[in-house]
Image 1 (cartoon, helix red, strand yellow):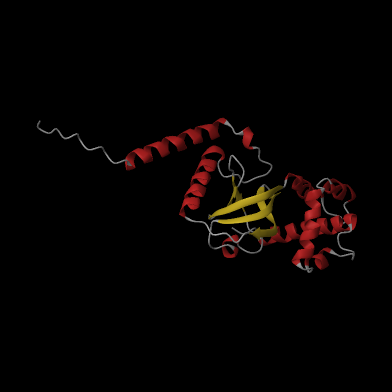
Image 2 (tube, rainbow, N blue to C red):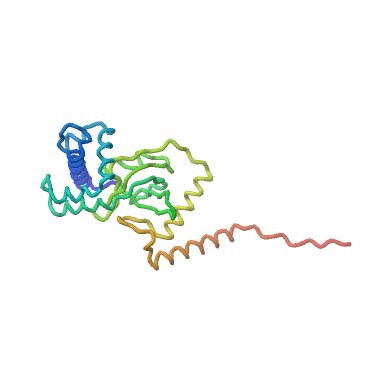
Length: 222
């Protein structure tokens, strides 16, 4: 699912302005840019500045305090929420109606429901699973990625696909599909425990229903 157009426009307005500020503080690129100019730069240069942001996430507080682009208080709160970013490797394992599932590679696995920005993740990655490297950000009580995803050229066989499917089901049973950040897997509630128990009960019943009955012993004459 795509963000509404106005929200996507606001996201890029805020994020590009933040990166321009980071570049000014860190001098990653020597030239001075407006946010619109910055977004016209080659992706490799923009990623260099973006990586500096996550190396020093406290710079967000300086940005909010100085407010160099005269954003509203609501917009500054959106930027401040990006301190709760989540960076790492994820498996894109499902394209659902509401969002794309980013399955963490951590243990225990967590399934994040992530919205697309201006281009559908389903169109970008029609064949899943795909292993990607990226950053998830909170945005208006939802989760988006920051506009930059690096995909690994790896194909997955049937065994890995089954493993990922099991990990996804277990993550969903343990935590549900996580749709806001920050999220702490260790702070799961009683409802999550109940869902996890139901999942394992269902899994056990499914295995039992597919088990072949043992043949009756044959008694022969002596």
